[in-house]
Length: 256
Image (cartoon, rainbow, N blue to C red; front, top):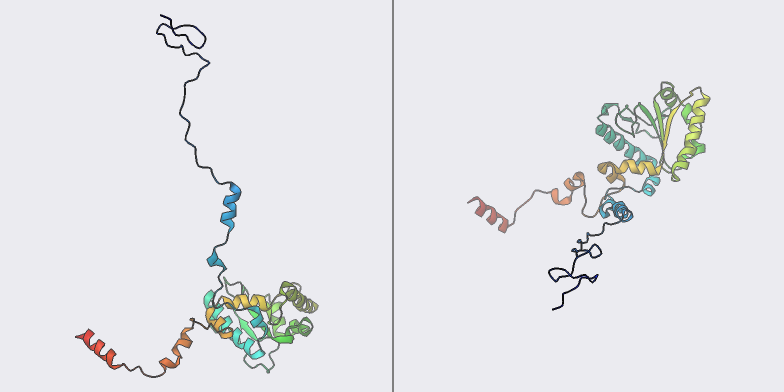
């Protein structure tokens, strides 16, 4: 009876082929791990803005609306805005003063506000505000404004002077052109480091939009939105409420 041979031709005692180093034992294949997304893909997904973040607030005010404000409208808007900002910052609202006499001599100051921290709008110093609607806020029309008595006094003691140029609509360049004129005037009267700022239509619109009740003054909400004041003044609320016969029955049944 012939004996079985191994791969190399040598018989084994049991008749089975001998396992040698050349032949490896069979192993089960390792389970495949799910592929990780590349870092590039993860970053791309994380950078995608949420759709909610792109939805505008119903009370947002457009700079184009600010540009069209008249002298009277700008004065009324700033009266409400300065008070609202002072309340938000916890400042003394009794020190917010706005001159409503547009044609009266103001010696260069249309409004005053106290220092307020934190408030990037009111600033850390008392502020003299000058309100310029329409063409009155052009750089050439601002010549000499920083030399007037009240702005000059504010700047001399280290306080702030801010001009609101509501028709300024070319961003930082427009504000910079006006600021240069005001700064040159202040330095001409001996104020070496004048604390002056200019707010054009873009930045003023941003500020107004932070206060819904103030924004509604220049951009009525409309649609399903309404302020409490408008809701209270709705014609439906002017007359006493009177129930229908069915409502009287329902009230009686509820009370029984």
